[in-house]
Image (cartoon, rainbow, N blue to C red; front, side, top):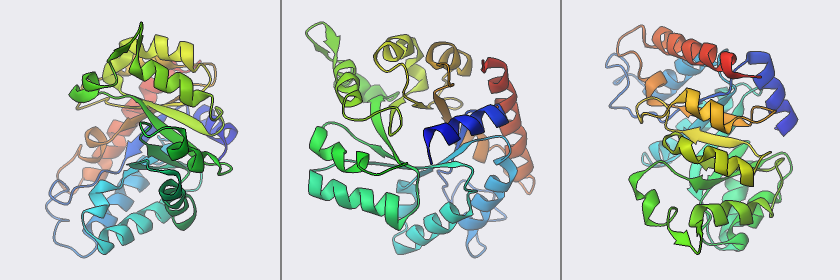
Length: 267
């Protein structure tokens, strides 16, 4: 998917919502837990309920890899069920020496038709370059995360600058806004103005709204650019909104609420 098409979808739907399909069999409604293909059926119901209110879906691969080959099959079936109008993210946080990264890129950009993949940046350019060589695919690099451990490395100072600032500034030179995004946790919204000064035109993938306590208003105020430039990822607050037979309707309602709020922030 191209950046232009993604922006068009955001404008048409008046939404920059990304629904996270981080599906845990122990957390889906009990009436589904023991049926065949429970996770697939749950995911399909969530996609049907939310697709009119979001522009993207993010699959956290760990939830599927943990099930072995069955989990990969579930992930693939879920991926193919997502409409082609929606931006499909593999949240896999890959990154290794160049030859290994080239096979990670092949996995998620060829074997599985994802539009984007999250990667870890700390092995440097040769670990990221293979992902950037694909046309109409996006590499989403961890920039400033919302976990407590961000202070261990990302928020260390190198001279007068934070490590995360140097990372984002350097990586921005390796790609373009047409193939490169950055992850910025919603609980780090105070830093968004600073990040926008470094990468004014790149999309930012922003997790942390909902259960993690991030503010959609603040993220939108400080992170939005002229094309929107945001994908706000919300997982548990949507997919686990309901615990009974009406779970999909409740997910639909929460998605609509987020979309309605987002529409008020769009320029």
